[in-house]
Image (tube, rainbow, N blue to C red; front, side):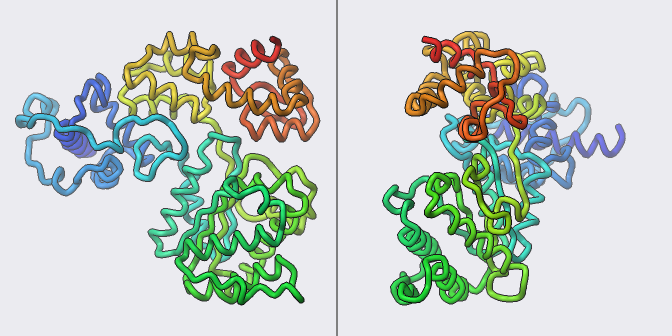
Amino acid sequence: MPRSLRVQQDCIDKVKLALRRNGFPSQRYLAEDVGFALATVSNFLTGKPVDYATFEELCRRLALDWRAISTLDFEVSSQTTDKMPEIPEAVDAPQELLPCYPDGAVSLGSPFYLERSPLEEEVYQEIRKPGALVRIKAPKLMGKTSLMARILAQGQSLNYRTVYLDLSSVEGGIIRNLDKFLRWFCLMVGRQLALENRIKEYWDTEILGSNDNCTVYFEEYLLPAIDCPLVLGLDDVDRVFPHSEVVEDFLGMLRSWHEKGKIPGRWKQLRLVMAHSTECYIPLDMNQSPFNAGVPVELLEFDSKQVLSLAVVHGLSWHQSQVEELMRMVEGHPYLVQLALYEVSSGKLALEQLLRDAPTEAGIYSNHLRGLLEMLQHAPELAQALKMVVASMEPVELDSMQIYKLHSMGLVHQENNWVIPRCNLYREYFRRVLSA
């Protein structure tokens, strides 16, 4: 056997043994062909084939003790499986390695997070740059928060300070008032940095405007107090879009901070990471908008290879035909795919039944679909627009505001002013309920 293959087989055998020791029966977790499945898992988790260089990383991502595994002494050959030492009785798998219901962001270290290589590495490199601005754009449930969590974790590994703010949590009475909102903004950042609230001391309401006060608070208090890079993650920035009295000043201020980071001074400490579902549909001066600056990151749907990798990690011995069956219903929508894999891998449903019931009230997506329907019922004009889209087998032209909102909800694919349903699940369900 060539040395490269023997080295790879050695690593595969050792990880197979470790997986069995940790309670993963090969036929359940790594499908019928353990070696092939492990190589697939390694490619999914590390983006690289299994060899000694990636062995440590693979074990770490699977929460295994690579040092203990690497010292195991057993003969490696084409017959290694038959020569493995006796395996102790399996113990329960670590909870983080078991398939879990896809409810919100995927936790750090979870093998069920699908890396979109080389996207993550490019973003990790970007936040090393002084004054960086990263803009994550994708419809809801596409993985924006999961990616942001990993960006912040990367910042922490570099000994940067990090702050995460979910703007969807801001109360309506605060977000409609610029001064209240910016005070809230400064307070929440300071709290996460474990700094004393000194807003009253720095807020000069007689001479300075709200934006200037907020800028001064960061420049003269928050940033000097930590004296190291700060990665500031702002999730659901769309929350400010409907509030014209806030959105222009707030986004303009963020853009100015980014520009200040390009010159020597305190603002080089700041790295901004913003996540949003659509572009801002309130007109902004191109020189004040943060949406034409920094590095844009667009999260796309999974392709068939990625879905197959996820199926393997869920312990499913699927073939390409089964992946294609699922994708004919939900395309590569991350949440819809993850939910289907969870239900099938847990043994609750066969794929055939899942797909048959998917667009009905009896299907696994019923809560998700009803939630979307409820939002549409509060926006009759938007519901009527979607009714036109799902009823047509050709792309439908809509006005810009309708496209923005339907796309941010994740209901349509957009190409200029023309849209189609994001997937057959949405087409079949909304064609039925909106025509009732």
